[in-house]
Amino acid sequence: MSQELSKRILSSIILIPVSIFFIIKGDTFFNFFITICFFITAFEWHMMTKDKIYNLFGLIFLIISFYSIYHLRNQFEADFTYLLFVAIVCVSTDIGGYVFGNFFKGPTLTKISPKKTYSGMIGSFFLSIIFINFFLNISYLNNSITFTKELLIFVILISAVSQLGDILISYFKRKSKIKDTGKIIPGHGGLLDRIDGMIFAFPFSYVVISTNIIKLL
Image (cartoon, rainbow, N blue to C red):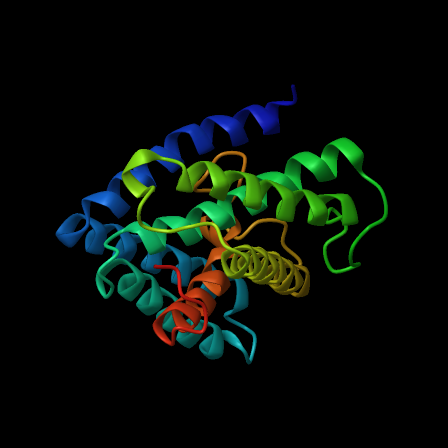
């Protein structure tokens, strides 16, 4: 096992439970958590694009993105379920892309991000569906959300948006001639490197859920 992969796994073991704790806890704990995450992400974006014309547009988008995260957690009767649902899709999408892409390799998906492969894309969709099935089978949530055809489409769409967001941030990193947006997370780089797909998936999911385009409950 490579040193980078070891760091990546160790960071995930720490970060995932901590994030879940704040999402479930809610209230002041959650608000504090996403505020800190916003400022770190905004700082990393600013440092990466401070000489670029799109710097301000990115900061405005981050405000919108974190605003949608806040409302996904606090606006609906489902409590933390919706936010945790979307987060699990994004995390499993990232894991699926990394594991399947490194194991099966194959043709590159795009020149923007040479490490992204078609096998990784398929793995992202596959693992997100598997993880969500597991998530919905937890007894606490068993009567909340049912895995329907609509939900399957929604999971695939969230995963697709997350992957596109990942590629888009990779494009901006290439434009800025950097590998990572920061060094705060061992094995991952910056916080923006870790949540690049999520910041696009959360606003998308919020719009879908709040407008009842797809009904989860």
